[in-house]
Every structure is written in C-alpha cells, then in structure tokens.
Image (cartoon, rainbow, N blue to C red):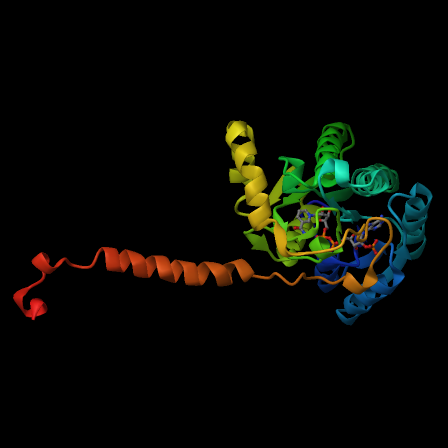
Amino acid sequence: MAGVDLRGRTVLVTGASSGIGRATALLLARDGVQLVLVARSRTSLDEASAECRTLGASTLVVPADVTDPAAVQAAFDAAQRTFGPLDGVVHSAAALAYGRFEDIPPDVFDRSVETTLGGTATVARCALAAFGERGGSLVVIGSLLGKMATPFMSPYTTAKWGVHGLVRTLQIEARSTPGVGISLVWPGAVNTPVYQQAGTYLGRRGRPPVPVDPPERVARAAVRALGRPRREISVGVGNHIMVAGFRLVPALFDVLATPLMRIAGLERRSTEATPGNVLAPQPAGDAVHGPWGRHWLRRLVPSGLALAGLAMWHHRPSPSTRSPQQRT
Ligand SMILES: NC(=O)c1ccc[n+]([C@@H]2O[C@H](COP(=O)([O-])OP(=O)(O)OC[C@H]3O[C@@H](n4cnc5c(N)ncnc54)[C@H](OP(=O)(O)O)[C@@H]3O)[C@@H](O)[C@H]2O)c1
C-alpha cells in the first residue's frame, strides 16, 4: 500500500467504536475505504458504522474481544469473505486501569495487559497471516507510555512497553517479507473517552495531561502510515522532551513524576473504585472525543495574558526615565 490511493482498499480497524480507532475509521471512510470495524460493543460499532456509511463507505461490523484469539481470527475471516484480500489493519484497541500497583485487583491488571499487549500480538498474528505474500500494512497505536513510565498506570505502562518491543521486533523480521509494512504511531495525551472509561483504584479518575491533541491528529498519522509505512510516528509536541527527561535525568524525573501526575494527570473530584471498561465494554461512554478538548489552551490564554501584563508592568518606564511631559 506504500504511497497508494486508499480508495477501494480494505482496512480492518480495532477499537473502531471509540476515540482514535473511531476517528481513523471516519477518516478512512472519507477516503472511500471498505471498512471492517472491530471492538466488543455491537451498539457502539453500529453507531460508528452508520457514521462511516453516511460518508459513503462500505462497512462490516464484527464484534470481537481482542483477548479471544478465535474471535479475532473470525473477524479477519469475515473481512476477507466480505471484501476480498485485506490491505491494511489499524490496531487501536486498549483498556487501562489507574491505581497503585498493589491496589489494582489482579484480574483487572491481567486483563488490561492481556487486552493491550496480548491483543496486539493476536491482531498482528492474524494480520500477517492475512497479508501473506500479497503484503499489507499494519499500523499499531502505541503510546508515550511505551517509552517512559508514570505512577498509577502500571498495567498500561507494562503493556505498552511490550507493544513497542513487539512492534520493533516485527519491523526487523518484516525486512525478509517485502510488501509487509509495520508502523508504530505513539501519541502523547489525546482527547478521547479513554480516561473516563478506564478502571480506577485511586479514588480519582485520570485525565489527559497537557498538551492534549485531538484524536483526528492521531488518525491522520495512522492513515499516512497505512499508505506509507514508517518505523515510528510521534504525535504530541511534548513527547520527545518527556522521553529525554525520563532517560537523561531519571533521578529528577522520579522526584517530579508523582506530584506532576497528581496535578496534571488526575481529576480533582473523588470517585468510587471501578474496573471501568477493562472487564466489559461500557458503550454509553464510547465516542470520538472526550470532554477535555483544548481546555488547557483556555487555561494557558489567561495565564499568558497575566504574564504579559506582569512583564509590561515590570518593564514600564521608571519615573526618572520619563519625559517631563510624562511626569505631569
Ligand atoms: N487517549 C489517549 O490519551 C492516548 C494516548 C496514547 C495512546 N493511546 C492509545 O490509543 C489507542 C486508542 O485509545 P483511545 O484513547 O481511542 O481509547 P478509547 O476511546 O477508550 O477506545 C478504546 C477502544 O478499544 C476497544 N476495546 C477495549 N477493550 C477491548 C477488547 N478487549 N477487545 C476489543 N476491543 C476493545 C473499545 O471498545 P469496546 O469497549 O466496545 O471493546 C474502544 O473501541 C489505545 O491503544 C491507547 O493506548 C491513547
């Protein structure tokens, strides 16, 4: 699919019912791609499918849990029966839970890792088999947390480090299978429902720390990678700075990580413990966008104006430097 027009191609999207996966499906629908939409909740998939069809795309909805290899294989089989050979796969499905490691129930920890890392292995296995000698393009949505660590997100960080390791291995192995492209898109914070859908055992819900990108920005990177595979695409202006801090000054990073997480990465309001959508889908919470948007810009603008005002006041001419007319 390198550098090709996507019109008429077939692409399977996991996590297609919400956030980045749904934004990617909508973008591909505009490009005239035949879409296979995969996630657990049929209700949310049907909604996403209706939106894609409005844009002119042909769609196939296949509810499947990525922790169930037989269900994922069945989705790939159904895709090829309906639309013929598969040209691309965007794998976006993941589920996460907040809490100190020892407070997260083992079944929730395990299922989050199984979904986010095990699901990636299962989807990649099915994708490579489906591409065969004809080739195809697999795009995996990784994360900034596949390159650094943060407190209170141990299942997700564990899984995403594994995802990045798996994708890099597949990229090296794919050198011997020309025609197969494997790309990693790793976003920073994105305005999707994932933070409200997540489990929490911390007494507080997560929220995206600034800067927050819209899911459409990640979707555009994923669609670019489908047509022109790339080893890595970072989405998020702060990503490289955060990774550099984590790697170059780990002691300072560890001192700052917990207070910064509490200030920027968690809601203020307290909340009950919940597994969120880790063990079962929560269709009512699925959507393309979360509620955060550019809230950080709204905070930055008044702060910026206040700082500019302070700077102007500080640099105002002193009485001794004013002209005689000004002194009157
Ligand atoms: N939002 C961010 O700030 C951010 C930042 C970095 C990376 N990412 C990555 O971006 C990707 C998409 O996240 P998002 O923010 O778009 O999340 P989201 O809005 O919560 O969407 C998650 C999707 O995964 C599906 N899913 C969850 N568990 C599943 C399972 N067991 N089997 C099949 N599908 C499952 C969900 O549908 P069902 O519940 O119906 O199954 C949903 O469609 C993830 O890989 C995430 O790690 C997100």
